[in-house]
Amino acid sequence: MHDTRPRARRWRTRLVLWTLAPALLLGGGLPLRAAADDAIPPATMTEAENIYRSRCISCHGPGGKGDGAAAAALNPKPRDMTDAAWQKSVTDAHIEQIIQDGGPAVGKSMMMPANPDLKSRPELIKALRAVVRKFGS
Ligand code: HEC
Image (cartoon, rainbow, N blue to C red; front, side, top):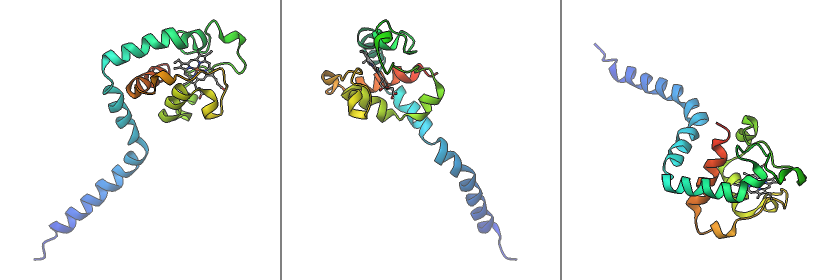
């Protein structure tokens, strides 16, 4: 009798691929991002949190809601970074660029300052981005 096993195996492979494809396409980036964040050493995260307190909190507020003491005088005001829709709408690269190069570099307010001294510390820029992302979770 004809052996049907190889064909069955082919179908199983196809089935698995079709089932996984949407997950790979849509969700593939999420585990990668989580893995990247996990790769930030705790000491670097602590350093970034201290930088947030010394350089960002005055405008962005302690919880990233845009309610820092200096925010009242700003127009446009810093947004509420706890807003899930905004978090979804921006890429990590956008957040990292505005932190490093300032608002005007991405077509935003010149009141959002650049941090040129952090250019040589890309892992610290990533950690600051992770601080921003944490406000959304
Ligand atoms: C002097 C006030 C001020 C300080 C200090 C400041 N920001 Fe901002 N930031 C702003 C303003 C104002 C905006 C909004 C710009 C706009 O919408 O045009 C902004 C925007 C942002 C955005 C992007 C939001 C978006 O809509 O894409 C991020 C991320 C951000 N700031 C992070 C930081 C971090 C991290 C620090 C500290 C290293 C920091 N900011 C320091 C005023 C400030």
